[in-house]
Length: 529
Image 1 (cartoon, one colour):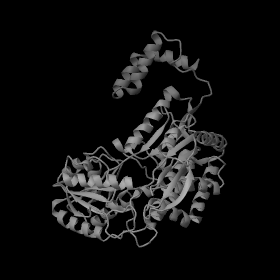
Image 2: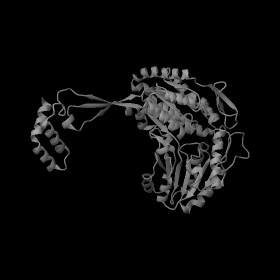
Image 3: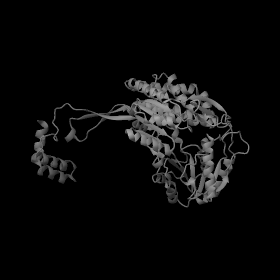
Image 4: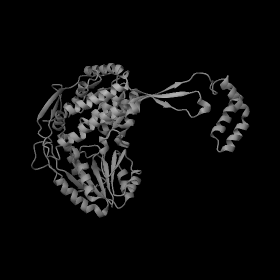
């Protein structure tokens, strides 16, 4: 059975990718129901935005508590729909989501509270007082993928709610049951009715959502192709948008790296979530002196990963999420071999496995320039390994990509790592680890080039979901010197002011005061009139 939309019954069919058995169905949201959800969200948001920040904080704390109370049921749903091992459901979805709720609850008042703005230009603005206010956008649309079906939507929803917005979420059609938990958790936490709504469907429903006139902000996580479409839809309405798109992360193993740690890091980074992670390791460059030992150990460890149903706690590697995903992935690996790459291990489907969409962990040697995997995301259980002679060559190779989400450097010399990190064109660089900050809500998440626009998480993610307003206070006792009327004296005074304030050196500034004293005196009289 295939997961996705059943057009005849207007339902989404959720399928376990390990057994291919149906696990549930949800109704596809009709256009009129989508409009109703957006309208309800707007009504809820208008009241919610008037509540103090403390109300938002308490709501997010209750959401995290509700998540913990139902953690086991949520974890089973995640595993059954996405195929990932149970340990990963807890570590990379539940813990990440709970941490996001906790961080936003603990920091929203600090980040979004009214902020005093200083005006150091005393001659111009001596009488001015200013404050920055962080106001909600309104209703924020979240369109999220299947690979982290709870962590991504819930941490983005936590940020949107922190900023005083309402949320309408369209989860992936492959993981609708997990997506439904987001609305349910907010309901159990006592959120105002309509504040967080989930709409279900395929890409058509997502397209309707991001184009709806009642949407005031968009956060999209998914493919580059669809991301460009979302960006165009947002541009048509000049709607704020954040895009988390693809990745093809590089791992640089320097000549002084701890080989054992590098191998274990590569194993996890390449095969976590069956390789279906936008910040997964897809490309590895190894110093020549370590290359053979690194490949031998990585291939042996990959062959030892236990494949099976994710609900078995002993399993390391579950299935891919769909037959279409596996077919695309296999074509990329085959294309690389046809262009001259070699296999150190893997490359096929397991001979003994359940009937699901499983694939062996695969290590590809070489990265032929004409091979498709050179530029396309693998997004499956494979990684390429090449040898690079020096640090400079590694950096050029890592940057030679249309993506720019993350990269990692493996070395015993942290100073050397920091110097290389400054030259890598990515949103994040990790040292002797990879992608861990996805689970740290205080760290910004996002990339460059085809990896997207903007950031989620951290204070920068909150600012992206806010309207930033300057509010000024002026008692009206002084007249600005740049007001009407103009004239020769006004021009002379403003020219003198420019030199007196910004001229090069004390002598030059003094000459400006003396040379334009008549105009400056005119400005003083004008201000004090």
